Amino acid sequence: MNATSTIPVLFTIVSLCLQQPLIAADDKSTDSSELQIDSVLVSLIEEVEVPAREVGQLNTIKVKEGMTVEKGAVLAQIEDSEAMLLLQQAKLEYEMAQLKATNDVDLRFARKAYEVANAELQRAEDSIKKYPKSISKTELDRLKLTAEKSELEIEQASEERKTTQLEASLKRNAEQIANLAVQRRKVVSPIKGMVVQIMIRDGEWVRPGDTVLRILRLDRLRAEGLINASRLQEQDLMNHPVTLIVNPGTKQVMEFQGKISFVSPEINPVNNQTRVWAEIENPDLKLKPGMRASLIIK
Image (spheres, rainbow, N blue to C red):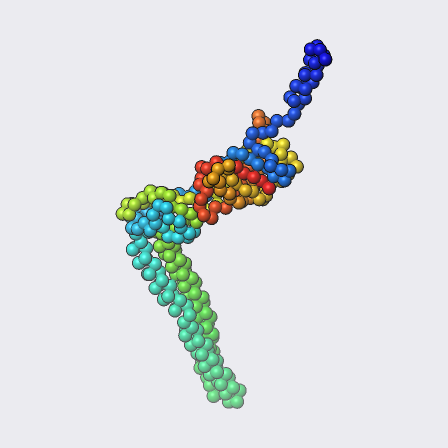
């Protein structure tokens, strides 16, 4: 074969090579059932700057940097002597109102008085039937008025009891408000995590909104990367299990398990890539925010 005849053959081979699809640098496939993203960034899911909710002097910081705290744990205490006294007063007032609301002596006395007055009126009417002039009309009118008055006193006692019950409810509400004022002077952790920074120290003055501590959740982290959108056309990756590999190919390799929690609906028109992230379980806290790793999607 001469040199002239080989030129078309070489041109054809080059053209076929150029037509082969390019593999994106960010994702590969180890087999037909896996997708691999070579470069993902580990980041935080939850990071909280815990604020003071009331004004006052910070009496006690109960934690140190590096300590792991549970959700709802008291981290610091703002001076609460006045709030405690107001709470005690509110409790006593509620107890007094509750005793008054449950006291039905007046109602029972009114009912008994009505029974007596009604019985006396009935005897007088029976006597008149037998002996028409035995009781004067004035006396009969007085007995009727007494019976009616006793009946109205029952109604009055019932209404007064309703009022005392409402007053007890108001005192109960006042006690709850006073208790809330005490609770708001406690700086409480809204999440389970690690204290990484303390902004205010014992004895310093705080105002509502001032950041007292900073807490990071480290037992579950996010691994975020980019994947070619063409790999997702026929796949729904949501909740798929994943394996995160840190330091692949070295003696310090570590593996963590998780699942896909988000696939962005947006596609970059320049490189045809979309964002994907997974939530990774990190019970031993060996995985750190800021690490780079590989992600294998099952």
